[in-house]
Image (cartoon, rainbow, N blue to C red; front, side):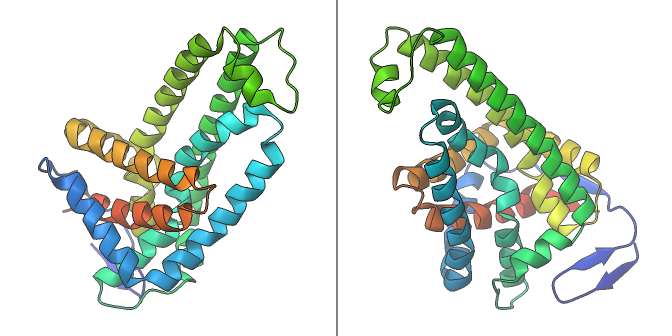
Length: 261
């Protein structure tokens, strides 16, 4: 296979042949620990990059707080778009892997490399987000169609007799959408960032990795969701720490799960 080497990338001139590895049951914790190690090794760049999304999250939360539909969709939306957001962290971890010092601008470099495939995948995730927004809207309307949402909308919804069944249906729907998003993106975005593959190949490879390691990937999804939850409960500020750790760790998951022949 012909290659052209550069500082941050190995540019592949023909499609790589990829195989999926089966990993041991301790893999998810190994990835998490590796992510924490990379976060510490790139502390300034990681936190600076993470703060960009903290500010974005705070702005979105402020703009949508008056509308319960947007509020309930926001957290799941972050989970769905998380792999795209983490591109900069994948690049930093690759740089550390090569023995070099990462820098903030690698986030921009990562977005440009294989940009067509990355943009195509972002559109796929955008469709999923649109589907989730519709599901949220329909679910709220279905259970609270006669409820007037005022400034104290949260108290209004929680105190309503339909809140528990609503929460069950909404959470189940959100979990289904998040599961699809996780399966198609957990490997595909790091792969697109690292290799010049098309979006279909990346998605198929990601799904194969999940299917080959269902138990490990379930625990990995739980770890990622927990990291995002910890970031949200501190009014998004915690994302400056948890988002970089999740991004760095996801790079190590990709490296552990995918081999190139």
